[in-house]
Amino acid sequence: MDATLKHKLFTYLAGAAIAFSSGSVANAKTGLVEIPEPVIMELLSDVEGDDWREDDLFHLMELLAEDPRQQVRCRAAEFLKDFDGEGFWDRIEPIMLNLAGDSEPAVRASVTGTVTQWLSNLDELVRARLVLEWSVSSDARIRLIVARALASGIPSFGADLALEYLAEDADAEIRKTAIEAIKRRFQENPDFYRGVLKRRLTDKDRLVRREAQRAIVHTHKLETDNRSA
Image (cartoon, rainbow, N blue to C red):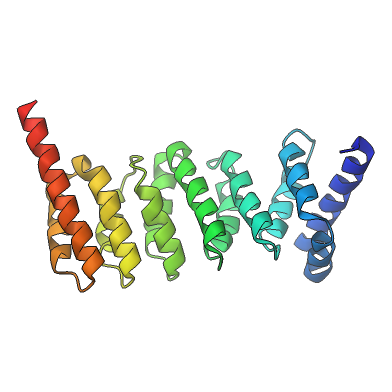
């Protein structure tokens, strides 16, 4: 892209971000939609190399998280993956919670990837707060995201309590995902997790019961192999 054009677009986006943060939401959103999606994607790939003030950058992410185009919102979630989650957590989390409640599965999948990476980078206490607070969210989409992130197996204080809670969720998909996470994390707290899995053997959902049975078989084999090693 021509450097002059790129500079003008950066300036425009910065202005839109500032307008968004000052309450001119409608004008900021309208202006953003007029920029073709491929141009936004190319610009975002260069943003980190440009001299943006932190405030402007976060206002831009807030604006992109509200964009009507799915791919732009996905890119906003992915972009935040590269931030220092610990240093900017108070600024990042509200944006990600907004994206986590998105109506599009692709956007929520991008959020899951970002949250999973954060779990490996955040300070232990911040990580534990994310896990526990997102697990008790009133939004099932947010609870599912944290259950999927926990399935990565990244150590986290309070993960066992969160998964016990999620395994009792009203949403069957969340219960099933929690069981999948428990299967991967079983060695962290075998006796505790075994009890959680056994309770799901009588779950009202057939797929959840089947996943619990598979998890018990898998973990039993794992323990047998460990004893014979």
